[in-house]
Amino acid sequence: MKNNFLIDTNIIIYYFNGLIIDSAIHEILKESFNISIITKIEFLSWNKLLNDDSLKQKAFDFISHATVYELDEAVANETINIRQKYKIKTPDAIIAATALVYGFDIVTNNVSDFKQLDLKIKTLKLI
Picture 1 (cartoon, rainbow, N blue to C red):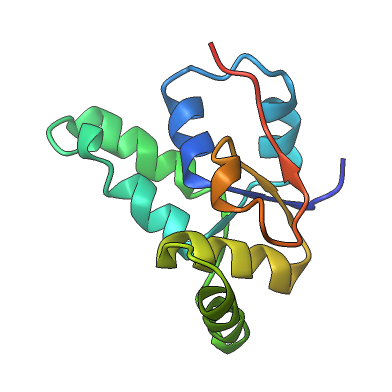
Picture 2 (cartoon, rainbow, N blue to C red; picture 1 turned 180 degrees about the vertical axis):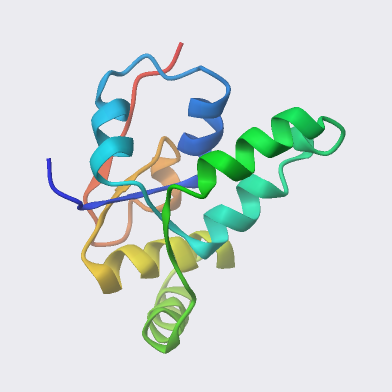
């Protein structure tokens, strides 16, 4: 498996909660732990981490292993294009734009957020 996946926030949260039963997640995280800066922000501001310092530390340690793609000019321009054409929330548009600009497939279970875009989408089985 090559480094060709961008992981959406919902997958990170499902994984962190032990809800993914699809064995593909282990290879994806081992070989393709790529996320958008938006996913980092959404995950690390997750309410479950607010009052649990141990869990918060585990989350920061976990996310430190990811390759984080910043919101650069190319991603911003693609986000603008997406937002002009489709009714997609800005965070999802940034994640989609990151995938498009860098040639990633998206790993998500929120298919409806990305289905109208020209992206390959991989879903994972949950408990």
